[in-house]
Length: 176
Image (cartoon, rainbow, N blue to C red; front, side, top):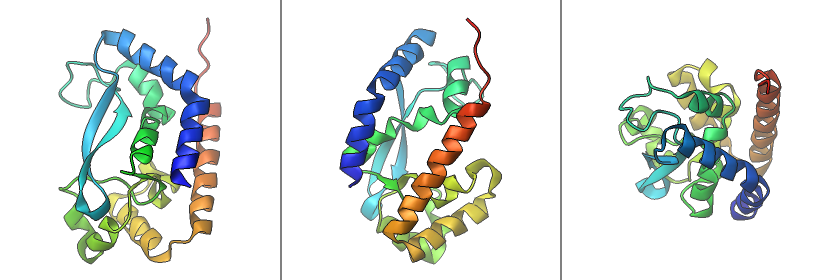
């Protein structure tokens, strides 16, 4: 189901993705994507894709470009992760994709975390990622892992879509 939905999204969103890729490239002639190392299924590391949101010479997140700011606020920077879903590295819904350094914070639940694919969205993200403390976010991931159902995945997807649509309604309009 992940592959069918991800492929469909990529197909229908391809004009938007292509436009974003061109704009990111033209903003400072750097690479289109950033690939961050994350822990996936069975503890395998993979490159979690995002549109690049910082200057091509930036070494920290402090140099977010104007284009990058818009991509981040709209969560469009994460759309390349649909490719990770197609490659079987991620799922549409699951726990947050974490780094190897974050894994110990999951304590006794680290094995449960590695038994599934991280999600493009999840309980933590759909609960207001930026408004949830790190510790509470881990608790949400653990709760998701222990109470998983297909129904819960659909509820999280609906909640995510609702949040994205309301966020896009709040973005400032650009005058031409």
